[in-house]
Length: 209
Image (tube, rainbow, N blue to C red; front, side, top):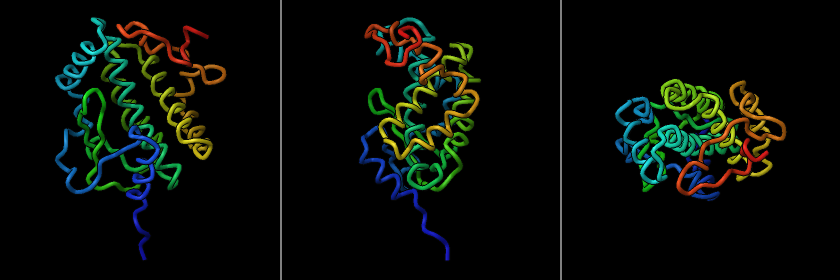
């Protein structure tokens, strides 16, 4: 007898952590937003970067690109780590199956049929971060974007608690993520948020260590 799909229940539990871990799922989500793979489309990415420049009060493209990547990659790391913590595997986040939309300044995730996938590294680092960084590195250094990804893993793990320690450690062992962090998991690069009109430094910023 085939085991029941654990992912819907896992996503329901994650939604209770906070809205950052939420995924809208079900057959009615099949046509929501656009496929995440469209982030590789220069026109779609350019619109997101333009919007980010406006809300951040910056004319620096690299600052906007860093923010767009950080906000997006943090959302999918949260979901991947959370479902892996609960079920042993990340929910499948293939960029052609995962759909995304915007709610104000936040990314909304949509899955028509949430099914088990691979590890968080497979689903996020290899499935999303690597192709996006390859596409966007003309705007901002790849090492900075990997720093954003590594910081996102640590942040999501902190919100999930000690039950996520093992899957967080496994994810941070991925070479590109490990290289982005120094002692005590302080990142080696700055996300550039201090260059926005809002300003400020993150707790793990390389500029304040």
